Structure formats: structure tokens, C-alpha cells
Length: 359
Image (cartoon, rainbow, N blue to C red; front, side):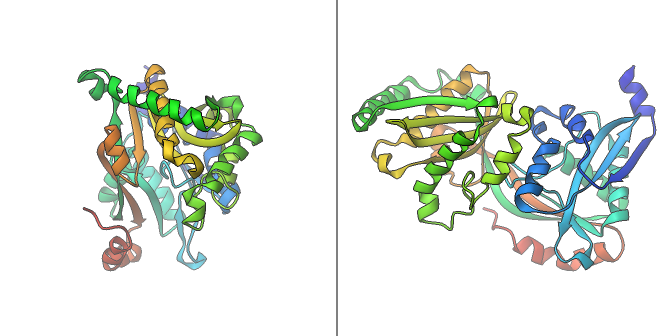
């Protein structure tokens, strides 16, 4: 009865010049895979990367059903915007599971009154915000321009278990053999942390591993998740929200008390986003990273996780684990009707070419 009343209630779209608490209400009613899209997720992005947010909020029957925070994109005279957040898992907005076409139409109408266009993404094909906006854009004369970023890779644990014991006993035996050899280099300590465990010292340990890893020696380090030169400020700020902190999960290996490898995830229900893995190369001969993420997967199975989302990047080791290609990850530009949409017709090719080549 309540759902029926909400569906027959008028849809109201409004803009706030901040990040309202209503974002959390929408996230709580979103698909489980998207419930990390909370107010503090966006606040952490502003803290780490800058920007001033305005939020488009759609309400039905007094209940928020859509939220889309926006910050400026490009030169101010262009009046373009984008959704803030971490690049990974993706940049999107929370969508209540009962949101309908009229709600997305109202969202686009509100966006068109504030900006000429906005960027949504990188985001997965099939994302609820993306699908709703694409349908509304087609109906409302907006132009939606995609560019390919990468393929995702998904590990379907349920499917593998249907074929037999997973992880395979032979794999676990091999791992135990390698763990014994690892122990000849020092005393290994395997642990997991989440929730209230996210204290400054834990972040410092993860940053120390990254600072010793290939990401610091072979790149400029800007993609590191926990260093101050990378995205460390974002994750420390995100963890101040207890709900997000409970979703943030790390498997950690210490050797003789010194951090040696980690596997960092976001756990949302039965879905695990594998965000980052790293290890100190001084122990590389014993594959500490591989041993750790298998321990992490065994724990995930015990905790009821049925799918691991490895995202983009090197498909080699992911395929060895059993991951298969999943939805494509794309960036989208939505341009309002009129001159912006007309310009989009001319810019579509350049926008698509600025992405990655799709295999």
C-alpha cells in the first residue's frame, strides 16, 4: 500500500547547494551493490580532490528516490558538471529500487535548468542511474555520448561451486606449500580488518606497502590507493562514515610484524569489489600477493560472498582465478536539448576516440 501511494504521488525535483543527508536515505534503498554511494563517499571526494557540490534530488511522496551530486567540469563558461567520487568502483548516483521513468525525467529536467551537460562515469553498462537516464534522454531530446574505458572481470563463485569444490583442493595444497616456504623468510601473520579497525595506523601500513611496491617504482604513484601522493586522503575521509567503514575490508599479511601485502575490497552484501592489491617485492619470490588474495577469497566464501568484481586492468591473473569478462565500463556525456545536443553530434567521434580501444 505504501509503495502504491508513493508511485501515485507527485514527483518533485529540487537542487541543494551541498550534500544533503537525503543521499544516505536513497543509498539505503538502492540495489545492494550500490549502497556504498553515501553522502560521505562524495564528501570524501570533495575533501581529496576539491570542488563545490550541488545535489539534484528527486522526491516522491516526500521520500527521496534519486540523488545526483554534481561538481564543475572544465571551464566555468561551459556550464558542464560531473559526479564526484572515486574512480573505482565507479562514479554514479544512488537510485532507489522503486524509482520510475517519471523520476528520471524529473532529474534530467532539473539538470537542464542548471547545466548544459554532465558526465556520468566511468560506470558499468546496466548501472541503474545510467539506464534510467538513457531512457529519459531518448524521450526528452538529450544526447548521450559514450566512450569505452575498459572491460570488467567478474568471478562468479556460485557458478564455480556448482561445478565442484572451489577453490580447488589442489590450489589450496599448493598455496599451503608456498606458505611454508614463505615462513622461511620470517614469521607470517595473516589478518583481516574492517569497521572500527580503520585507524590511522592501518592506513599507514597499507601506504607503506604501496610505497615499496611496483606502483611507486615504475609509475608516478598517483594511482596508489593509500599514499598521500595517491588517493589516501579519499579513503581516510570515507572511513569516517561508520557504514562505509563496515563495507571497507582488507586482508593483510605482515612478515615479522612488518606489513608485506594487502588486498583491499568493498563488501556490499554478497558482492565484493576488489579495489586494490599490493605487496612488498622483497618477498615476491614466494608470491605473497597471490597467497593473500586466495586466503581472502576463502574468507569471502565463508562470509557468504557469491560474486567478486575485479574491475578493469590486467586480465591475466584474474582469468587464472576464474574471473570472466563482465559488463563494459564507459564514460558518458549527457547534453541537454538544443545547441548542446547539436554540438554533441559533432563531438561524438572525438569523445569516443578519447577513450580506450574496445577489443
